[in-house]
Image (cartoon, rainbow, N blue to C red):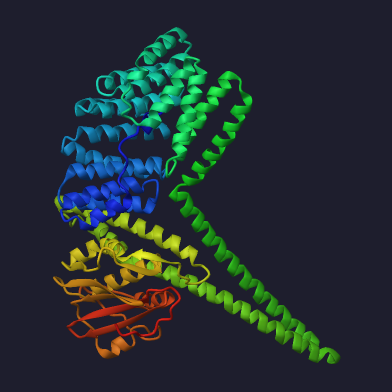
Length: 616
């Protein structure tokens, strides 16, 4: 069944959408562009997909647009079902979208949500699947959108085929054909081929033959609105059903040639071409050709399976590897300590043998130095790892504290109904941001288990700053602090993207912490020959010269309360300095009491240049 592969207009490139987002000023446009970016990123980068869909929800809620909010929530649920394989989270997003869709009489969104809730109920063996199907069909009819109604019937047809309940599958297949025929002949043709297969599997050969003849009479009249790929597969399948194998083979081979001539051939398209061609050769008993294309089909299936490895699986692998590395290092330290103790015993024994005394001392000292070097190296590795996990704890402290505060207020009943609703929305956003941050930092930290080693690349600095400001929007809004990004859209910087994200996040969070309500935080960028300068400045309380002098010293106490009595450990700025220097950069601080603070980061434009303290 190929209804879900229906072709449409070529999607706009991600780079184009991101450029449009950077230039958009209206919140409605920004919400829509974030939604479209989430769609485009779904098969490319899971983190970016979730980030942009959550941002679309955030903007839509701010401008009180329930239709756009429900649409983005539904899309998140669909992503969790089919891409991330997390049906529990998918159901949660569908239920949130349903609440908004009912309030705004959004029948199309309600039909979509109930349709996929029925799919989840089927997978989880929950007994309300039929009830959910009934609701999905009812709302699809009320939407007056034939596409939604046809898609609903087709999905339920596929569900019953999977359960081998062919009579019910046939019922929904016929309904799908009837609902789309007045509007889209291509979709009707595809559904007709599916119905033919259902009739054959039930032994209704005569009905299947009549249907095939009816489809053949309309094949040359198809407008191909669903794209060349769908038309080629459908036409070839019909020719195979009619036993016109030469025609079917020619259609598919031409389709494969055309696909391979594209700049970026679609492997999913080739998979269906090969699969259809394989069936054509098997039906004719051409086993040599069938074997050739079965090997090609196996290669593509293996590649697609590897490509679709879920984010949760990768995260689990990362966590297991981290645990294994820690266990290995701890075991090595224990073994080294045991070796050292054993050698001490040997030394005592050697003292009793005067003739071998000198030899034993020389051997013992040599081995002891080797063990100390190995132990120091392993200890240094563990210390680096502890710093990385300390960074994780530091970065998550503020959002987690915000979540805890909201939950406490809710438990105490200190919130009105409206405040509770707003708090719930805020909690949902914070949880999404925390999850994204956790995934990013965990993936980065495990790649750095052998020390902080930058992976240098060219970074679009303006977009990265926007992403970090988005993480801290709720924190800034709570203090009515304005976050301003003065960086040119096309500005680039040569550094490790994950390191730079952590640097910006810490500096922005620090600026918000020590800025009074109603203040502002600016990020500026200036490029000179050989060097780039990035500054983060604020209108905060500033620092005394002594505090500035000790700011990056681990053995000095520099932590103090923020303007709203926010607590800190002082670790953030120390890590910022380490990451900047690891990327061949230089950091300076200028501050005066009650006049604000400015952090200046200087990076070489050419990789490998040694950075001192250039005057820009």
